Length: 105
Image (cartoon, rainbow, N blue to C red; front, side):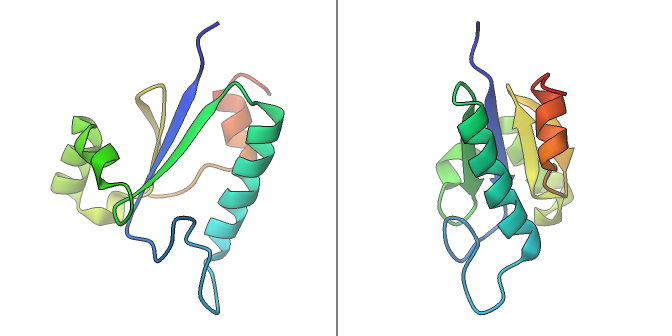
């Protein structure tokens, strides 16, 4: 069975998770918890978070995402892909959405 790959392309973050400072973004805290849970339940799924600040090379390797950022601006981020296909824009998927995308409803 082929391994599923999720890549979350994010805007500029102050640290690799975005969970820093006196008042971290609630959406980033929730995403972090969802990804931890997903990694535990689905170790076969490769999950990458790519921030413009820390992982520019991942953006440069993906022409579709690069073009989206060029034409729509950084507000299109975050963009989530599953096996190279865009599955969410301008928001982070919920845990339930990740499960549905991975066929685990």
